Length: 359
Image (cartoon, rainbow, N blue to C red; front, top):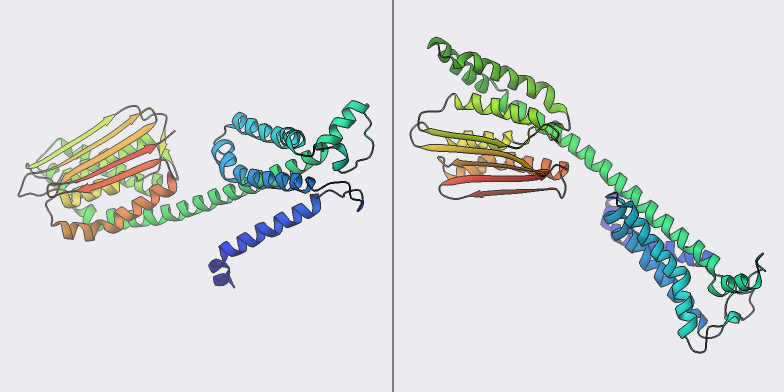
């Protein structure tokens, strides 16, 4: 049953819409004085025009007004568009049709209503324009189109967050397996050991970096968002640990610009790119480099990582494809429509540029 529904989803959706409109027209179509002929040849076109307007408004409200105005909290603009559509449907269209059709649109052509508890003038106006009937029809269409779209967006957002949570768990496990690996720990500890033997002043600092890095990946990385300062600090510690094994021919540049105090970011956003750079961008035999930059300006975060290529391009691509695809998916889930990722490579360097709108 499920494969059939998935295969014919569009056809079923179209059928539901057609049945829905048929039911709406049947229920809302006026009772023309219990079968007495009180309209002429031109009046049915007035009803056709009204229902066409409601159909167009339904889909405009669902796919344009609600997503572009209501969903982004432009409440005043959304209400303004809705009121304008209401006035157009309930007042302007009937007036235009009554004024410019031939023969003239007469009171006798409208459904006959019970007497209104108003004076003759106002009663005449309301009967002429079918104000109450039009208002009811518009209100029903407005509520259904707005409600269905809001519920659909809420459900889609819930699904997106669930998928993001699942992806984050998978990313954490993958990261822990690749980084908290005996090989990584042994290399870091061996480097610190030799620093201690040579009584290098960097040994205590390196121990603190390793401790901070391990603490981060075991505690902080299970959250959906963390302070930007923590992410940058963890990146600094990771770079420091990886650079311990670099030779004198290695050139490292790490630059940060802007204040990261009041913004948050998805954890482990930068490390996969930097990990890739250290894994395939340094060598003890030839000159190599890694240039990393993190900039925050006007709510836009820009991260760039350029590294030299010292491994065959074919080997590098086959080895890093899974990791890069994983971070692409995480970014799409965490920042849909609010980020851009450019990855370029030539014979000399591998370049990554990531931009995220954090506002």
